[in-house]
Image 1 (cartoon, helix red, strand yellow):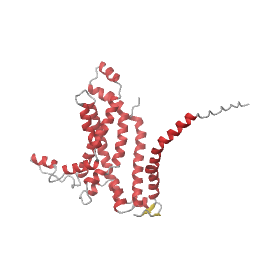
Image 2 (cartoon, one colour; image 1 turned 90 degrees about the vertical axis):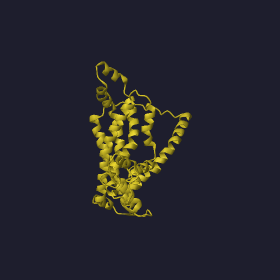
Image 3 (tube, helix red, strand yellow; image 1 turned 90 degrees about the horizontal axis):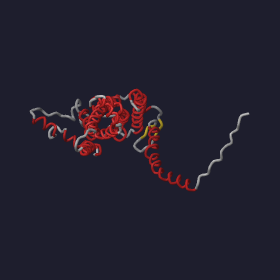
Image 4 (cartoon, one colour; image 1 turned 30 degrees about the horizontal axis):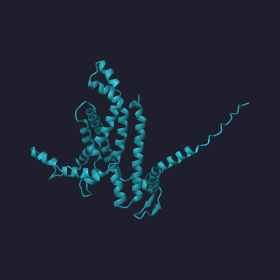
Length: 306
């Protein structure tokens, strides 16, 4: 006969434990409500809108997959997606390289490290709209400091933000300038978390600074690099504010710099096609999710968690 285990009686919670539970729920209630109201519910509502024709007064008519069918055949969407991919492909690896390089310099024994860290980090905490306006003036074809410097050396100025061949790359420079400092701080924290015993053992074996960096620092830093890469790709797909502030609608380079989020903004707020805009936002979400899943699968081959 199978032995029947006697069930242990549940221990009743003491009044003190109940008070602690109540206090814990009270503390997490604002965050939970905030997530529900400002994140989860709008996301669910956005999915519903993507299957509807929503006018400017939020009156919706169910249209099924019509918005997605239109999306698949819209050349402007694919052009904007290509521009966004180009932005991500250029800024992410360049940003990680520059951030790692600066973090390695600031991890060395130099004077005034805290001052340099502050200076590099300041662009990350500055309002993006203000940064975009300052850089827009720097790129100005007549009064910009960039063209003035080029002319002072005997060269000729250039229409940096109105030329479709250069406008997107100028925006990339601004994006890198704003994000490199933030990623540098994260990578610097990762470097400082590596045990010094590895370097001491390598030095005893005769390994130089360059060998120690590539054989110890880089492999041990891969988890931090992986985190920075994911966040950089996500923010790259969501780039909007710098492009919006620096490139006007009448700019000849507008089409060559229009990102997917800018197209979403135009569809929702300029044209009032909120259902179609919701479908665009779902496309962005799906692409980011797909890329993130690929990264999570691929990180098993190159990220070192030892």
